[in-house]
Image (cartoon, rainbow, N blue to C red):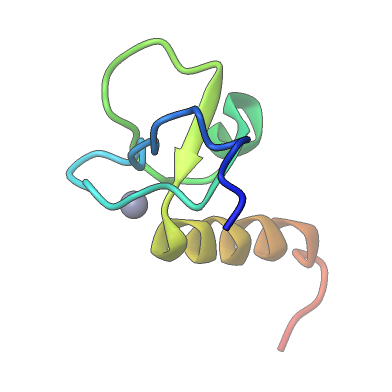
Length: 70
Ligand SMILES: [Zn+2]
């Protein structure tokens, strides 16, 4: 197992009330366009766990497909 690049500690999800390990990180701007509530603080990079990443994806997809009505 090569763990040389894993010097960074695991980040925690930045969504309020969530303490899961983050899966990915995004621009604050991208995340602020969704209605995910973030923990107070200065977020340049927002970390999202698996669940909130899915939520984020759902919401960003929704705004992109806004003109498509089902
Ligand atoms: Zn989360």
